[in-house]
Length: 499
Image (cartoon, rainbow, N blue to C red; front, side, top):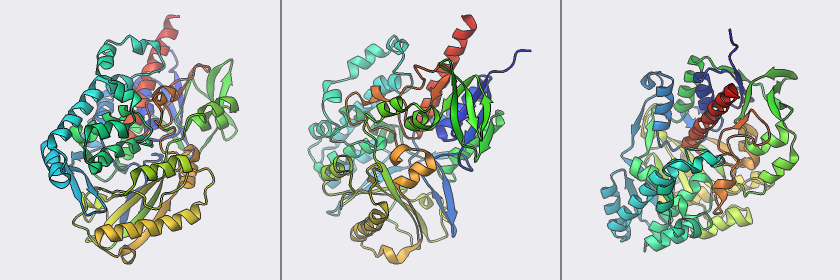
């Protein structure tokens, strides 16, 4: 009887979990080694005094990525996971008192924008239509296939993609593209925000990022019952059902490399042999720590790191009727804020504040009755040795002052519990170099092509998934990275059989 091929996956983040399921379905004997005591990576969770907090990603889009995984596994998703579409994608607050509740209904959203800002509704609808076409004709190719294989260039939709792309998508920044499409600064700022979805600067990142609003406004945002941690639980349960073995509190010490082939990993001083190895660790750390390849690691650092985050988890002993699941409190000078983050590597004195409140969707479950669980985040630079203890204290004051002013409240008196996550802790807990949430930024025209591929060009049998490699960070793209990797593995395995 022929022995099953074996796969070792380093890291049980969302991409590692999805990769384990896909490889198990392909017939691999899969082992996952994770340095933490639980799965999920950034998609974690904790509970304190009756308040439930998701620690990482808080926006859920494109549930079809997860649906596809369960369909592939021939498992009923409803037995593991349920979610619902949200009536509003976000509520936006501006310093002058303007509030925009972004309805999932595009007609209603466009009408609200016109009413609140004066921007013609037709401009919103035209922009979102163009965003949809750009996503369907361009992103579907480049986000679902390896950009680093010639075969992608021969896929039939490539001509359609090239016809859709305009010079402004490549040679204009997202801000310049948005400024030419909208006349009101508030609306430009609202759509500039989407650069932060992959940790980038809208004043530097290409106009191509205008495809991101399509996900939120045309396809919609969703809420997973039980909070974002339910995504981790569902994928972990599915992987176990498919026979994947997990080893927690067992960090991989190095990847075994012999004759330019990945032969397995070393864990706790022992060799674990495998047919293939998949790294769900930041690509920089994979080369620096697991392969002892400083030259390759340095090459990765030539690309600008994405932004990081400073997050306050606050148990609030009051309900705020004006807030929704997702809320943004904008900075007055957005350009200066991003200049601080990316050029000066500092925190801006008037940061844009994001507040996520899952108790809005499950009152009495995510927080005690009559109270709310606030996930309060600002974008900050990647860690290069800033004094984060001082910055945390300063930012806490700045955030509370801003929210007090814009919500006309006294937040300090309402905070019952507090936990804080900073870039240093993000790096320690999740292996993200410098605490960068998305690996590298997209602050250049060629950034997408410079991202590390889902395979090694030098080491046969070594593959990569997760936010630091193609196609990028965030839950949907991490899930897509697992799919791309599994297709490459399947193709390579078939080639081996016939060689």
